[in-house]
Length: 138
Image (cartoon, rainbow, N blue to C red; front, side):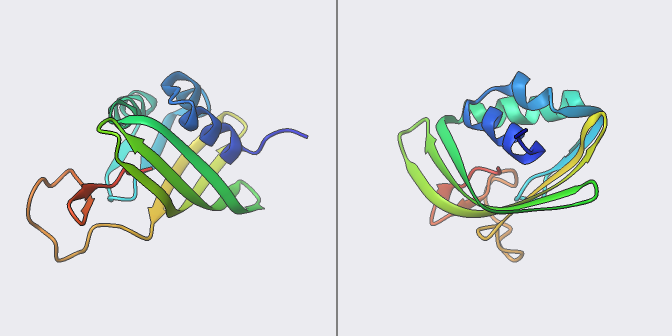
């Protein structure tokens, strides 16, 4: 049985394979991360993924449930990260929504249960932190 587009992307992400992840996307794809950052276009997604992977030693995603309706795929999952400083962040709840066309994934969105608080405006505006720890956006 063929892998779902979710499994293909997560497989590349868990190998920290920027080229493999980007290969699943359309040229004009859009991506939203759990911290609300949005990027459009394969080159911009490549840059964001390379930056994200640069902060990690490893990552793994466990799909708990997956749904598919038309061109829309949805997954409930848990993500675990080992950061460059050896900090382990384990079993972080995530949801992933994507649109898959005949040309590849055109829209991908990640949601998490640990997003930055709407009233938390201090510190680095690009970093999502919980209890002082950086939380990866995928």
